Image (cartoon, rainbow, N blue to C red; front, top):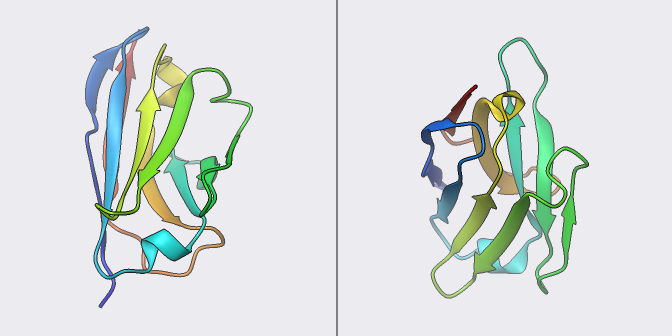
Length: 114
């Protein structure tokens, strides 16, 4: 059974940084476009960043210039470096394929205090 496990979240002050990691069981990760998504309280889940199998990236406007998505296919991991964090970045962050193909993991909570 495929599992996605997100780690690296936490409580940080505005302007701080966090690096999220997504680990995947199985070998599907390196063959797929992967994305980071987030869901804030009372809001729909939204895509934050995408990385193709070849390493091309795309960012939502909210994270452009502040977030960097990367991947290590050998380690079966995807990362999201988040800098200059803002209170509006507070959310649970998830990873999954693009489009989503697998059950969501538990996510990792990111809380940015003002």
